[in-house]
Image 1 (tube, rainbow, N blue to C red):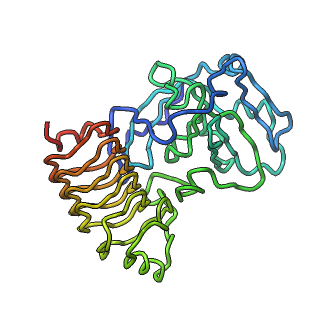
Image 2: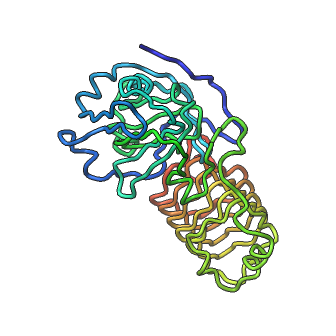
Length: 331
């Protein structure tokens, strides 16, 4: 069986790449890689729960799916070929019981990553173990991951080991911890995050704070911060996702391990800023001043640098610069 659901179309805000970038968690729990003990459990609201070993699963998995992948961090890979099996066939074996309204997936991962989708999407979901004729890498979810091409890629779970049919929805890991949108439909570009994390009074307190320790690692989503004039240079570990930071003066600031993913920093002054270890995937640095900024060991997948001043930028160990953006850096 070979299915082709690729449209070859980029959705709003996406950048096409010929690569398969690694995003999210990179290492499963050890149980994922012990194929002798590995199990895929199918339970919850089913008529006949399943527990399959890896060889049993792979014996069903000789099918191909051609699909487009759209990551919430703004990269898209079009027309990838995956090897696996449609989930619908497996659930036909288990039998969907009355009352099942959502599919919940749980991973072999240290933090028990999970996600859920409405059962109406069942026919679109695949279980895959290979891509473009090769086994998936461990970082991409080998030995088995889910694939749901019609949603942003965080709805496709690496290292899946349990599928549960439930009556009520439960927010997944990225939806709980990073305020990712619970639907995640990429066609409009407006379902990346759930916004509104601060009311106006809280936002004003943030803008005028003289210390940001209490905001560290607390995701602030979709805020207009163009009026921000930080009273301190110590901004490490802030999580300002999908925020409007156009033209803000962040020169010389300590933004180590900050998360500025999908934020708009066009025209911002980041000269001499320390962004080492920061997550700036999908961020827009167009026209920004990055002179002598430290981006070492940062995550740069789908970040945009058109027109940015990049003289003296440190990129040692930085990961994910897409091929279309490499020309914006000296050397």
